[in-house]
Length: 116
Image 1 (cartoon, rainbow, N blue to C red):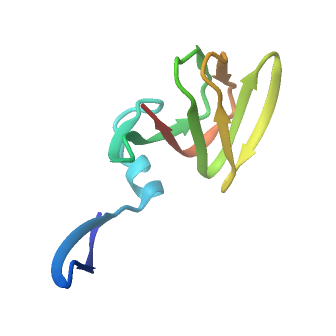
Image 2 (image 1 turned 90 degrees about the vertical axis):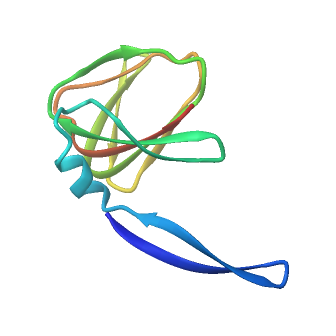
C-alpha cells in the first residue's frame, strides 16, 4: 500500500490529510485464505472489503442490508433465484437486502464488497 498525500483547503487555512492508495489485486493475492474478506476501510458508514475468489463455490447467504459486489479482476458467477449471472472485471452488482445469493464454482479473481 502506498501513501497518497492531499492538501485540502478548509476555512481559509490549510491542513494536511493522509489517504491510503491500495492495489486491490495485489492485496487480494496476498490474503491468507480465499473467500475470507478483509476490511480495507470505511466510507459513509459502509465497510469496504476485498477478497480473493479461487474457483471454488461460496454457499448461499442472505443479508438484512444491500450489498454491492464489484469485480476488480477475473469473473464471478453469481447465483440468484436459480439463475447464474456472469459478472466480469469492472462490473458491479447490487444485491438487495433479503435476496439469497451464492457464488458458483469457476469464479476467480479479486472482488470488492461494500456493505454494513
